[in-house]
Length: 337
Image 1 (cartoon, rainbow, N blue to C red):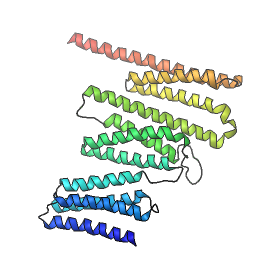
Image 2: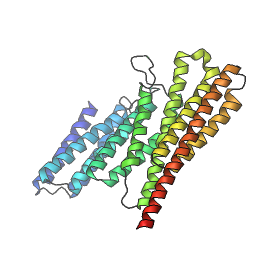
Image 3: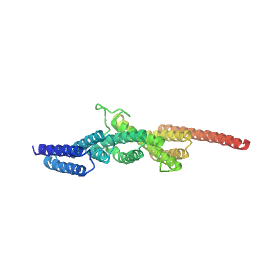
Image 4: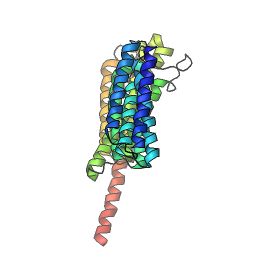
């Protein structure tokens, strides 16, 4: 019963203050705006005190945020323009909803996964709106969310449930894999579409390379986590012997993809990064994974890594020849002109 009184008072004063502003020549910029903010703070405090933990604080913040979002929309309809008051209501409500998201999934082992999926979707929506409406501030905010969520996911993913569908693990078709995919897709989107007008073209190109490189690291995390889960679910008895070998082979193939990416887009950074990954994988395979293994497995893994190295060398030679031809044609054109 006390909570109902608090809820009724909150809605009454919110609506009453808005009606007061509307009757005062649609003046939503005065003291009524600040009184509404105080009204929301008081309701949040009393709701938490009265409920005493029976309801998570996120639901209370979500309710207040929805009320303020509706209030901002009503002010916009009445004034037919975006005013500071409608903007304050809308942004305040949106902020409260975003804060409340952090409480969703509380008490469950899968809370980190739920948090990453929710914030990943929020970042994706913000990026789409920012790109379509040319709102650079919103695009930068979505970039910041993506970076923070990506770092958080890299830290917590190794101890987080896989997010199985219908109680069965399916490689690359589970909520954990989808979280990786959302983050990777966002990063590649930023690398291709995000341009910050305040920066020079060279700075934007460099940042695009950084976004793409971070996205490739996310793809590497996706491969690693899914392969680990495959061994845990389907080949548990042989995981201690062959998991390291499987990871080495997959990382070697991934290094090849990085070099192909760099060759296609003529980016030296990705080719160098892919080569570094391949060298690290080779050292890991020889010194750690192949120690104590049977000769057949040693030969097989070394053959695969050797084939990848040979293919990378062939790609690099083709890339150099093609660049040489392009440079030669450019010099001939300059000479003729």
